[in-house]
Image (tube, rainbow, N blue to C red; front, side):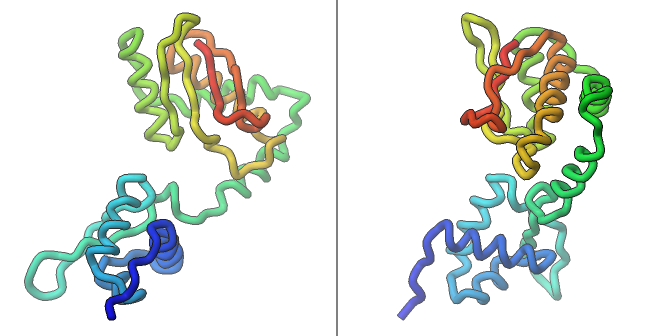
Length: 200
């Protein structure tokens, strides 16, 4: 009797768990691991690739024939100690002194090496693309009251809510620098909102 097709989320969780323990894997090895078909595994691998969780890494064929694609976690999805390190660094900052100056310096460091050009929708699209390259889940929309930028999830969610206040300030300053216009935070995930929203 052929193996039952595993539920989509369960199979993807297995793949992610496997790749947290191994530097890379191909569909053949993963299918063999759980007794699934290569087609089933490839389906889930493609989903994870589209979500930006996995990447294809260079591989060399053993013997003749085409190389089998090797998959690994992206840098953003791989387990790391970044949240703990950021939390430790933020805890050293005396928020009563120079927090505004520090936020300005951090926002300046996050700017792209080449200034954005253009105006209106062109500039907003450039800013959104740049933020997306830094794993900010961002979108913007034009409104009668002015453009609005939304982060669908907090890029600093792993940090304690109290330490995110400075980083929310950094996000606002980064947007101001990218767009060349004042930005005001209208909603914040750290304060219980469904998304971080900035009005321009």
